Length: 228
Image (cartoon, rainbow, N blue to C red):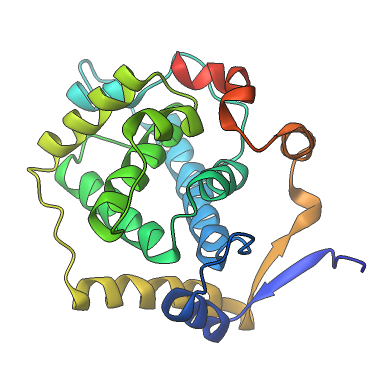
């Protein structure tokens, strides 16, 4: 069956996915991943413009610099989130809670800006912590590290630092969860629907999908840049 060049996500589809997602071994990627990816991509673009205009300041970032890589990983946000889902099967609510954590983290640490050098580490850390908060059963940190392209020791440090920088404020009540879901729905309602242009996905993403096998450790080397 031919695949359309673009996929339209409506607010109704997203809400159904968020609240009525069906877990199966071959479950399709939750719609929230595409919406979250788009939000983060726009945030990266905005922060890049701000960084260009801002004067350099000494000591900016502080402890949050633990999330920085020396080189920019060559995997898109969309494909990175899809990889995390493929190997962890974390449900849509996990990604919403991770989104809450990222927002809280940025508010708690105003000197921190999401960038191409820190976003991948931030994502795998928040998704792992959110999974522990939401899901009844979870993988070990070592497994999340393999999926995310990190050493277990590094992910353990990122988790601990994140928790302290957040003041261990991880509770997400129903009203907060609902408000963030509504925000995601508003995002897809702009212009009558959210368009995910498949043609805009880079060749590296397509290549990585063709190479990925069932066991994530077989292609651990593909994510070496995240380790730096």
